[in-house]
Length: 460
Image 1 (cartoon, one colour):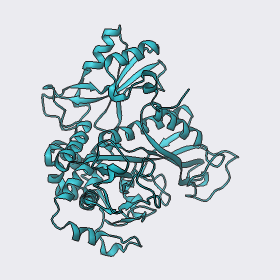
Image 2 (cartoon, helix red, strand yellow):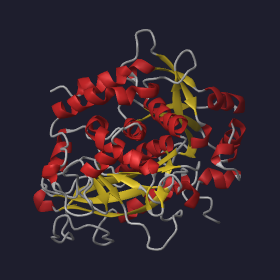
Image 3 (tube, rainbow, N blue to C red):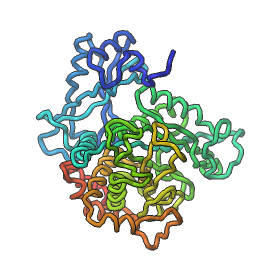
Image 4 (cartoon, helix red, strand yellow):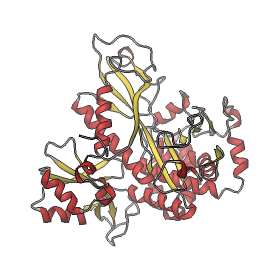
């Protein structure tokens, strides 16, 4: 049987996900003998939530898929106005997949959130990233594609088979030198079946031997997802984390996304690659017209970098949310040492990765801008919405050329003494968020209540 298309339901239905309707998914449930349907959605804590149904008949299932269900929003999101707790989960049928972990064969569908007037719920993280995405399209005429590099640690008890290995030497290691390879490969296949694009996956540098962590071995892995429109990229990160946690539980492993597992060792970042494109839904040559001009940065690339060097300290409120987030940055193990950008440099805040020599931009080698600040504590939807606001801010920066010149690392060692510095504690992040809130709230993307909730979380 062919593996193409990658999505299990696209292979079964012979349609792209964007073409699915409720009757298509009723057919899946009927012919695949499914006993459960789950409406899944992202809550205010950034994790997946679920509401399960056992459909009574085909008509009942079709109604669930078309109309969704009510929920108590006050238990899901901070900042909801009094009397506005009734919300609606609105299924997005193109996100449907077969749940690989349910003990009962089941269909899962991601949902957005509507308020009681039937409009997108302003406080929903899903709403916020979609508004940011549309703000970029409407204001700049650009399609914003992105992907996340999901880094994670797998922990297990040490055994006699574990030889002493140097710390932080796991990069691209393979079996038998890492135990998590099989789980990582299962994760890749599950993600493809679910319709989530994956670029590649590998063992990462982090490795903590048993002597350093009370008899446990921690090894680091990474799954780099595929480019997708901003809201889909945020969903993909959340689903990948959910998948990895479930797989680890099945295999008796611990899975962690902590910014730092042990001080002095590599931590887990959540690097975000961006491609602000002039062509909708493509990553090939046509998509780069606004990004590259004769091999150099075009307008949209300059706007994004200019916005990120200004908004990065405030974006830490969404992308670097734990005390260990500062430890990861301050120990400077391939993490940003100052607010700078440049080609190839892994200690820059914003990096322009290598392009294939002599190759035109294509599906395998799309040109991207890599934002290396966020870590495993990030709220993906709010982080990506903030990055959308950054590119608009960059376009509106009057002295953009001078800003880019001041913050350029020129491809060499970064002289941190001449660069603006990143916040070193929560209070500094809070001050940066206060300063940036008008840029984040522009275009109605971030509601004031969500900014206030993040400011409250940064107190102390």
